[in-house]
Length: 86
Image (tube, rainbow, N blue to C red):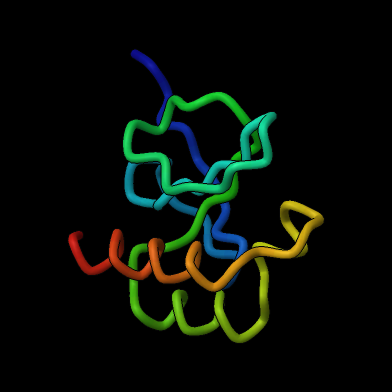
């Protein structure tokens, strides 16, 4: 039996199964996007799929720290749309 992969939300620091969190990826080309498959190449950061974590993510600019670069507002908007779909 395979163990579930546990990941931590970069906002609330809550730990959860990888499948219940939203993965955001920064690839080698510097593109930042929501990884729907959970398998895209690049550095990944995980966020809970709820509005509270999304608001805190925007407010604290947690992705800027996670990826060590400036994140455009369009990326945060894309994350918001992906969370609304779930």
